Length: 438
Image (tube, rainbow, N blue to C red; front, side):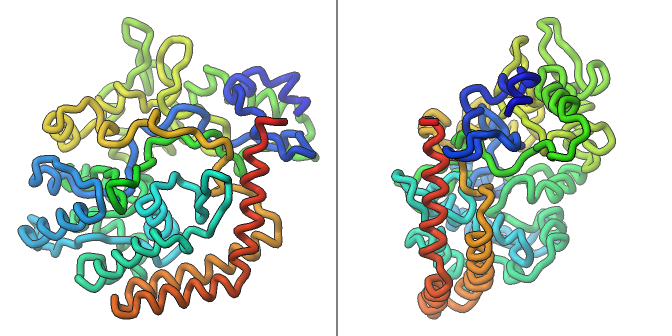
C-alpha cells in the first residue's frame, strides 16, 4: 500500500475510485495485490448467453431469438431443413463440453445467465440485499436444466455432451456441424479459427441475448465493477520491491498499456492522420486466423495478471487502450457479420443486447473470484463434486425422472452444508459491498 502511494501514480490512475476495492477488509485496509481483471468499459463484442451459426440466422432473415423457446424452435427448424452440412456430415443441434472443468463454462454458467439474467458471479446467485445462494438451488435454474433434459431426449443436445473431450468438441465446431452452443467465445475460439481458415464464416457464431423468458434481461453488456480475488502482488521476500512496483506501474502507464495491447508502432499498428491507432487488414487477419499470434508477436500475451483497462476506455489521444474499439471491431467483422449488421440495420452486433446503461453496477465485486477461507473452500469443493454429476444425471436420465434426479442432487447438497456455505459467502459479498464506507 505504501509502495503504491509513493511509486504508483499510474496504478492509482487505472483504478481511480475503485482502488478501495483492493483493500483486504474493513479491519485490514492494506492492499496486498492488484486485480488482473479489467477496469471500466465493457464488452464491445459480447458472446451472449447462447450462440447460433450465422447461416441459421440468415435463413431466418436475422430475426434472432431472445427466449429459450424461440432458440429451440429455430434450431429444430434448421435441423429439419438441413440434417447435414454441405460436406455430408450430420448436423448437431446443441453441443456442450462437460467432461472436464469446462462443465462450469458450457453447462453451469449458462444456466444462471439464461434462467436468472445474472452476470458472471461464478457458482452463486446474489440478490439485491447481497444474500447468496448456490445457483443450482434456484427454481428458474432448475427449469433451464429441465429444458436441457428435454433437448437431450429429443436428440437436439449432443449425446456426447458429458463425455467428449475438448478436442472432439472443437473438431465438431470446426467442421461446421454444431448449430448452437451455450458457451463463451474464448472457449470455442479454436473452432472458429478453423472455420475461418476454411472459408466457412457462415458457420461461425452469433452471440445471442437468449433468456428463459421475455421478462428476464440478458446481462452480457453489464459492467460488474472491479473484480477482485486474482491478480499480481509483490512477495515479502522480494529483493527490490521498489523496482517491482515501478515495473508494475510502468505496465499501467499509457506506454505500457499500448505496448501490451497493440504492440510496436509501424510494426503491429499504425497511426492515422488524427493520431489514432489502427491495425492494417493484414495484421487483423494475422491476429484472427493464427492461433499463435500472441506468442509470435507478444501482442496481448502479457495482459493476464497485470492491471488492464476494459474495452472502450480511451487514452488522452482518443484511442482506446484495447485493440477492441468500436472502429476496430467493425473493421474486423467477417463477411457473415457484415451481412448481418446490414440486414438488421445496426452499426455493431452488440446492439442486439440490452445496453450497459440499462444495468446498475453492483457495489460488490463478483464472488466468482473470491479467495475463500479454507473451511468454505472445502465445502465448495464438495458441493461442486455433487453438482457436476448430479446435473449430468438429471439431463441424461430421462424427462420422466428429471424431478427425482434433480431433487436428489438438491438433497445431497443440503446434507453437505450448502446452507452454511451460502451464509459464509453472503457475509463475504456484504463485506465487499461495504468498501464505499471505508
